[in-house]
Image (cartoon, rainbow, N blue to C red; front, side):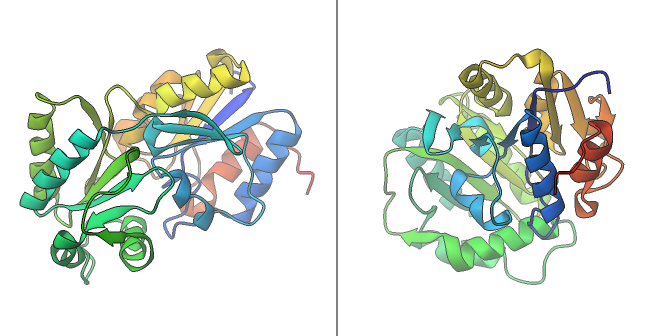
Length: 288
């Protein structure tokens, strides 16, 4: 490695999370050791802030969180930045999603995610067993958990500030048709889309992504982008990997991600790839 980073940005799904949506205790400990040695560690995830606590070990701490693909940033209880989708956009997209029978979750800030009651039947059918072969087990388990525990079924949209939309389809054909619908809508309304698998797409505010979130977090800590490292594995990580000084892809990342980075981990997310990479490359001595 050419540099000793002052700030490290870590994706969650497929990176520090294994395919059963858990962060290992080894990863927690290496993050603790990095921070003890004065290196700032941040999460940069497509997940909303409310989705993080349930997948990390007790006592898991980082210097800041960039959530919903750059829509929001937090340092402890401090809100560093929050972008919001407009109610007009939200209503328009839900109407189109219902018509296209696309599984969706709307994420209001500070509230449980919402799906409208009128769409409940087809949304639940979309994740009925058996799991399609092409859908990753981590995404499938997350959808199952969302249906069972996290989605609040509402008659109407509630809230005025929204961090993102998440859409899923059990077939690539269905999600690709929906992406085309969204691309058509972009000609009339301003927003950004991002994907983290071949079966999903997310909607955020225009020109917002993980890289814009990282810029705002670096400003908050008065850190330079010249001493940054990031690790990720999927398309929604591309802006982040292209922005930081030193970019690392997971072994489990697709080839088109590996082709644009400086290095690739030796192990996958199921083999504690981030832990092994940071421990060996940064010569971290454990204090645990």
